Amino acid sequence: MLLGIVGKTNVGKSTFFSAATMSEVEIGDRPFVTIKPNEGIGYVRVRSVCTELNVKCNPKYGWCNGINRFVPIKLMDVAGLVPGAHQGRGLGNQFLDDLRKSDANIIIVDAAGSTDDEGRPVPPGTHDPIRDVQIVEEEFTLWIAGILRKNLEKVSRRILSGEKPEKLLSDVLSGLEVKPEDVKRAMDESGLNPKILLQGKNEDILRFSECLRRNSKPFLIAANKIDVSKAGENFERMKKELREVVIPVSSQAELILKKAAKSKLIKYEPGDSSFSIIDEAKLTDAQRKTLKLIEERVLDVYGSTGVQKVLESAVFDVLGSVVVFPVENENKFCDKDGNILPDAFIMPKGSRVIDLAMRIHSEVAERAAFAINARTKERISLETELKHRDVIKIFLRR
Image (tube, rainbow, N blue to C red; front, side):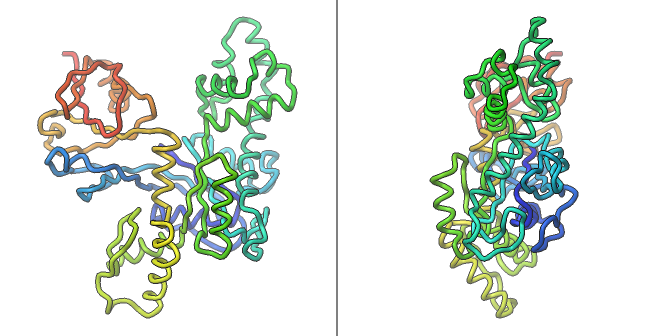
């Protein structure tokens, strides 16, 4: 699972990335702080399975606090984007290239409207954050359209020879990891059949490319700097006017809280709606004031800093993924070494037991015979669709 962190330059992308991953990256109030993509690990919460099964998790990766299992995902913060990126302006080619393999993209916007199209600081409320979203989506759509235009003649010849258009177009866009089913959905939504599309009319290609982008590289909006003047009213407007999920975020607040927790000044875990001070005497007056402001302006108003909610909404709401726990002993819920619920795999929407077997190892998939739902002890087939928080034991042929 790879989530891209994208957006106009100088809107807080690197701060969001640092808050989500606790990775040290350069952060600054100027355009193009990020040149090369930053990669790191964030986590999504899944309601604990171990408490229901009356066992205690021993995760290989991430951790479990008895309430939530924190499952790792990959995050990539790419170079900031400016209008004209699809033509190579700014760091556009690099920006778009870096996003080829992302499953979904989080668009970070300056909800306060305090940076212009080029990422230059302006007074809060003087720039429309909806424009930030439009810039990213338009550039991505134009990039896809450009790839299609370059290959229309070749695709047309092969379709005339009898090849399926969905497969051909997904092959052309294979670098973006576009699947045939994405192409089919885009054709249905745009109302364009291959014959019309291959006529090469600009408006048809753009309409198809936009539908394809939504299906193959969906976006979610993180309305960052939510505690800054004008951000709240802009957020409400974005929710009404944009078709994507929009979540209020204060990346800076999350980063401060995580650093304070790491220094054992407060008790706080990602996604919590509050924090507790461990030792009041250890806090300076400045730290106490900052924590109070975060509490009053972010947590009390929005219920969290939003960073964790963005990651989880991207994985579970936008992509519809499920988390599955494979085990080797369906009675003790452990692996061959006795580790309880050691693995938690994030699987794409619609995945089957055989897909889980392939995820474990190709040899497991080759030898898989059937599976057991470890919760119910029910025997299930390899074609059974996986459900969120399933615990599965796969039996192999001898």
